[in-house]
Image (tube, helix red, strand yellow):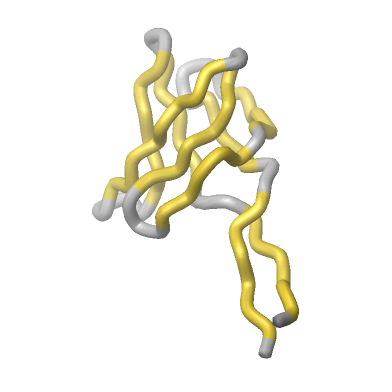
Length: 75
């Protein structure tokens, strides 16, 4: 049986300067958090239910993403 799993890179938007980043995925928990690697540091984006986005304020900038990419995996 096949299923899907989260994979990177994760598309993250720097809302402060309107820049799109492709960042490596470290960890993902649906409707909880995403951890990505940014500037050689792990950064956690937490799920925001009203917007259905993962968000964080990091180094004075607002970042958001709607989730990781997925790939099919066959058992």
